[in-house]
Figure 1 (cartoon, rainbow, N blue to C red):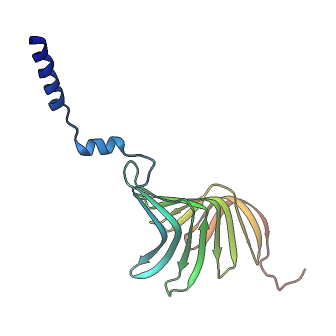
Figure 2: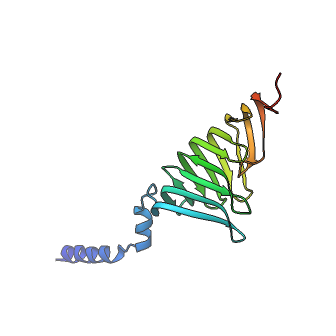
Figure 3: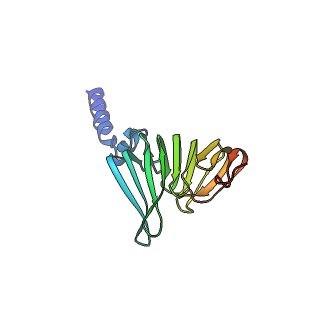
Length: 183
């Protein structure tokens, strides 16, 4: 009889001592690889003092907010940049992108293309970093630019986000300063 009472007391204590906090269970069971939010057909308007600075479009967007807050663009993105007067100035596209939500820095990969409409220059690379807060794009990977004035390639590329002014190192290629002059 004493053994049955002891077992019963143990079982009762066991069940009452086993409590799980709902938030702890959710944290343990949360799939760290699954996004907190998923959005389809997204358009984001980036403004500066109420004027369109850029318009970003993506077919799908994933937001992760737990371990390292970030936004992922698994099917890539397309961005139109505008002048202060509202004219479309340049265009940026990539097959994949991810943005660190804290630093507002994008990493663009997979067939990155950037076009400057005024100069008619097109940039191609496989990796580009867009620092949204400083409005700068950079890469240490190979960059190719071709346009009406020639074609060039090089490394250590740095430009304004609208691709109007840029610098780079280890450049090679052909560039025509004045196409109207003949040799």
